[in-house]
Length: 283
Ligand code: LER
Image 1 (spheres, protein in one colour):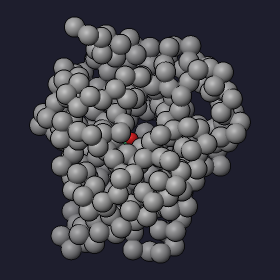
Image 2: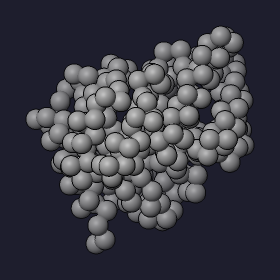
Image 3: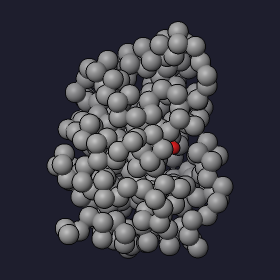
């Protein structure tokens, strides 16, 4: 497994000129950096590629699915803008060698409502059909989409691996897989190991933080179950620490991060990586 950190731990938005942060992440010993795309204009792949290469860091591109970036929308203009955004993210993924574009691609973070069955069915069907189109673009770019289930406070559409698998079945495209985030799993799944096994070969990316979205290893998540599940499905891909700084994140509000989990964000990342290396080491 390779370990990475999301720039959301420190900053928002990430822009190509923040090379000092990339140096910090490389110096800490991470294998890759997860780059959230808040605005595709912020990230210049041609400029970043040599920087990442010099630092020995791979990149994973992650989406910032907020506001009107909504593939379940009924409004053609909103949909066109959302498709433009996701297509630009896919171009960045190709440009930076990211094999995956991860995130809750089906609907924006922070859209949970008590909606009627009919409304939910319509949104699901539109998301499925638009994800199929997006997966076609991903295929042309040589990238796989990683559909991330979110917890119930952030979405009413895909909260569990079961939901994600239903969506995968409806979309029916080989370039759509599942990205799991241990924080959301801890709220929604009954059994970490079983949930990972259920994702099986569809699993294309993993994000971690602990049960309180704090430093991995400092909460009550079932880390042993997660390791067992990943081993059972033969996952030897990327595992990234994703949390948010309350000081600097467009997502901090949407995901309700109001407090600090370490004396500094560097400390958060350092302790998290230390834990993950011990966690992954053969026993
Ligand atoms: C939001 O809670 C989340 O987990 C992110 O991965 C959003 O992209």
